[in-house]
Image (tube, rainbow, N blue to C red):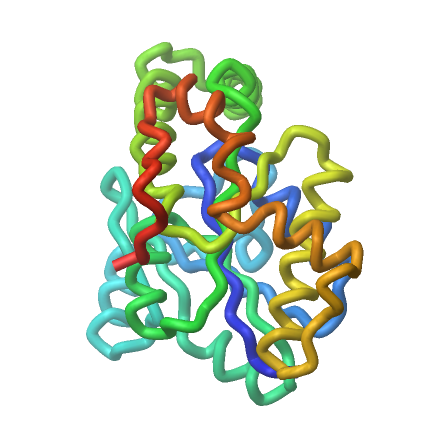
Length: 238
């Protein structure tokens, strides 16, 4: 293994956790980094499964001790990725998958420029609103202001789409999982120097998700969030 770092970001409700879990089922030699957070568990979340739930004092102690690859404060709660996961992945010859927000992705790209970044989009604003409503009901939250705040935050996160290497639209789970797998395998081969044939199905699927190739099919999604299509080309998460 080449020790590739894969960053997966998405607005809340886009289904990146489900996609990531599917990826880990079907692609071997991948280590998933579980983030630390100071927020309280939601629903059926368990410590050490979705997150490591710690106190603010514990988190800030880890900051002082330089334990994080990246961390951010989101709505008053800390989220961070511990360095130890990257060390463990390299020690075991695995690639590392990070499920982090745009703030964390920005920090990580600054530290690891060759990390592969993937942004997961919902198929439309309406679809995301339905998913967030279902999530809110499951959490026992019925405050419309909470839903509107999450939708607003989603649009702000989506504005960063052009800073990512790949775009996956999570409409049909099987198709989206296949695209994510293709990206990981293609990049893994590229980093190892082996590469895939330009005519291979996996290579073609991954290339279709590359930012510059995905732009035409995501234009309507961006418009539903009032996000500019940004025809100027991609930037970097910095």
